[in-house]
Image (cartoon, rainbow, N blue to C red; front, side):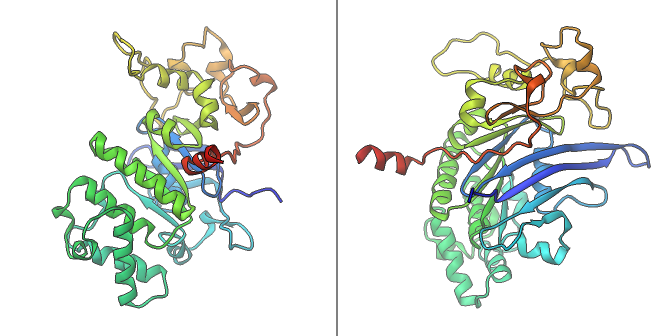
Length: 362
């Protein structure tokens, strides 16, 4: 029997009011499809404001409604012990409270605003444990200490009585990861978990996530705009622009052969070590206002491949599989006219360093 996705998003569309008055709505996410398999890392990449965080928040029904609204779509959750997949968007708030933290956890990009400043670190972790696990308070304290130990915090028992403001940014992010993983979730949503940290601490946090993923056998949805982080950590990459996924595939396929002009623009803007650069390339123009997307392909006003093609300015290209396990939404992509309309679905996982080393030894 083929492996089934742990999480599958189908045609997710989320809108917000364009202004305070009643009227047209801005679509932050439009017809998003993606799949995450057990123990897989899927990276969601794109500029700020493209819909990455809204997609992740929708998985846990954390988009405030109102003003937000789930216009369409389904989010199927299929953990190994489930009889049948459940549509997370159809669950009640009480049912979602059992999913949040216990089955799917989230790490936010700014730990100082995510941790409650008036409660100790221990109180916040213990509360999550008591909510999702059938244990008494003594065992909950032990689990909190074990969680802090797992994320590399020294003297974890004494840290339980600390308040967030007494910890450095890197330590607070480790606490957020410990809190997220204390209940052994199957899926971790990591929303730019290293944005506010210096590069040394970034590397430590990402290495920690890889190690915990390997030991806990969990999947990760990694939201980032850093392509270097994607190259080092992801199995599959989904590139978002203006609320849509415009390219999707195994990380090696997308990095080796980017097919969408937006993806190529992102790669061209990256400095490379060991190579002399003048001024870095930029993508001309600005991301369109979600309340006023241009007709046709939303990228066409900035696209170097348009060349006066009227189709680009009148018809939004569908996301099609143009080569095995590589999807793109661009009229000028190779084989797009013959592409398959199947929703993106890639179970690929890169070999772990441990398995690679064991294979080499054998």
